[in-house]
Amino acid sequence: MNSAATSPAASGQALDDFIAGLPKTELHLHIEGTLEPELMFALAQRNQVKLPYASVEALRAAYDFSDLQSFLDLYYAGADVLRTEQDFYDMTAAYIERARADNVRHAEIFFDPQTHTERGIAMTTVFAGIARALRDARLKDGFGSAMILCFLRHLSEEDAFATLEQALPLREQYADLWIGIGLDSSERGNPPEKFARVYGRCRELGFRLVAHAGEEGPAAYVSSALDLLKVERIDHGVRSEEDPALMQRLARERIALTVCPLSNLKLCVVKDMAEHNIARLLDAGLAVTVNSDDPAYFGGYMTANYQAVARALDLSREQVLQLARNGIEACFLPGEDKLALTAELEQYAAAH
Ligand code: HPA
Ligand code: ZN
View 1 (tube, rainbow, N blue to C red):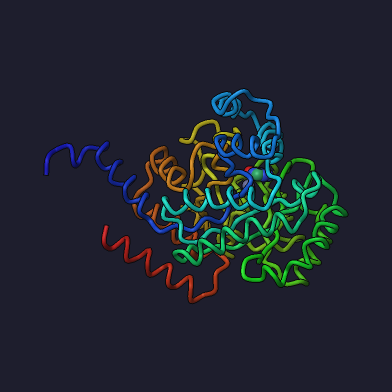
View 2: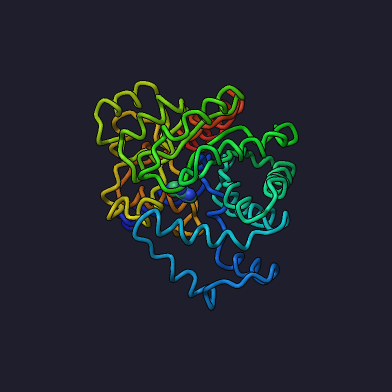
């Protein structure tokens, strides 16, 4: 073995390689956030939609966000190119290719129907395109997936109820995929309690429940998502650290946080990746997981997210492995599937 093999750079490379091959779960992924500029331009041309950018490069250059809202404005504008079932299929199929390359074994995917139904796109078009791509992938090589319908929190609870009513007739047809309900979009000023009744209804209907909380909003939103919405996982949740009692509860109850490091950096939730609190959350015994959120906008898919935090926070191999274990623990697969994924993960760790 030459001396370079033991240098910090070489061990960083070894951890990068370990991360790349690690079997992963992805629990916080907005399918509309996987629309890469190249595909956005191709769909714009196919559907004769005019984009306010001259080129792919000009669009990418606009991905310079100051906060969540500055991103959401572009994200909703970008989604306007999605018109047909084939568009939703192509977007989802492209995501699956990227996820496969990162050794993602199972992805629980958010979609925002209101972004589309508001523009006159039928609910059936949205479901059909996404689901066909997920089913094709499952048949091809067993790529595992589920769909989580998200309500947009900047809209009213009444609108969320109407969206639920529109989607429910499709439940049986998509029972193999549509398992849950989530809550996303502008967090500040739109607290969980605004959606307590519609979440109550979704709970009665037997959906798995998650919600974004504690990304830009305070730790109190995490507590109210748990107490009032009765969610099983918190999306983001990084601001939970501001409430020590909440931290203890999250650790004790093993309530997972689906953390998205590159998203947090791009949306200025953290100034520098070296300041990210994911290692502290992990050390405090929380079930933190790594996810990519809106990878086309934030500069990286699953492997890139793991590698970015591992490098910036000098994570150990064991910490990386624990993040991956947490991802399996926190997913909504049946127990026997979790055991099989865990066995695959441990086998990988033993062999590498
Ligand atoms: N936060 C809130 N809403 C979102 C996000 C996010 O990170 N991504 C897509 N919609
Ligand atoms: Zn998100």
